[in-house]
Image 1 (cartoon, helix red, strand yellow):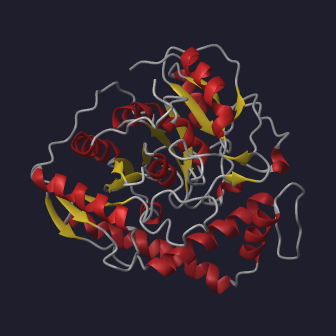
Image 2 (tube, one colour; image 1 turned 90 degrees about the horizontal axis):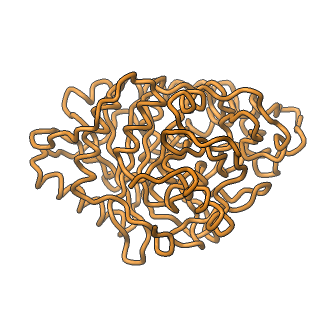
Image 3 (cartoon, one colour; image 1 turned 135 degrees about the vertical axis):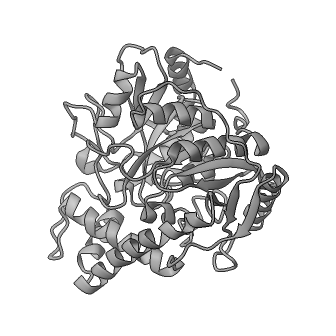
Length: 410
């Protein structure tokens, strides 16, 4: 269904006050292409680029980020910027300065983070595509919690110039959309593929796909486990050869620590937080304390974190001698309530693709008994974004496209 930018603006007027997905809106003329939203750490000329921080409320760029420039050249309309967890360092998009963004499936649930506004906006049908950033899973986890599709590109495939970074080592810009075909169209623009080739879903029969469920080392909710078993059964029924998989070298606890150390060390440098307590005005206590923790890590711990990430990337190269793709749950749990603590294992299945620089597509895979979206992700070899999306489209045809949340139907 083709929806105009004017129609989306009408839906934003109707629904955004209920969700707090959009933070700032443009008044630019309507383009001829797709309709986009940008996470608030991506520079859109003329709109505040806050990175979710009160400190940058008055920071209005005079120039677009590279991805926004590509969108405009392709005739796309940028409707505005969407909310995020402060500094892109968090799991809930419960933002002290810009408010709590709600999940369209259930307003008591988080939309995930840090690109929660992106997931909420796409799920509620407020835009064709929302841009997010993914450091350890922040495109794919909101896609999973909000019941939409999301793609983390191969490192370097989509430019990050003009994005306020959390971690220049791990950050990626990627799209969220309601179906894989729209992700495909988005990647043509964002990665400047330079052709208009249509999406042709891959033939699944004969593919070798590794099945990664954590082998008991990652605690899955019962709903996620059931949903993942169903997805695996469907691809096996389509002729896929499956085999149990675990990423080499990727120790869950060590990887969590490595990702956090690198993010908080590099984030502290970006935001001017120093070990001696220098604190720029406008950072929340929580965000400041996380970054300050990064400044207090020993050189040995910091180097060990970088070394682990490098080891994971090197070891991942051998995976593709045995597998065409890897299928995993996107997150170990469904969206959780704002009143619950964020699970420590939230990024256990997503961070591997960031460390190893791999393309990964999160796919809606059904609903839990209490109506929370479920999700799986397909991870491909480095540089094979097209092939990963083609295979994801074939899996989407088996498991079904995301429905609209109740109350947000067209």
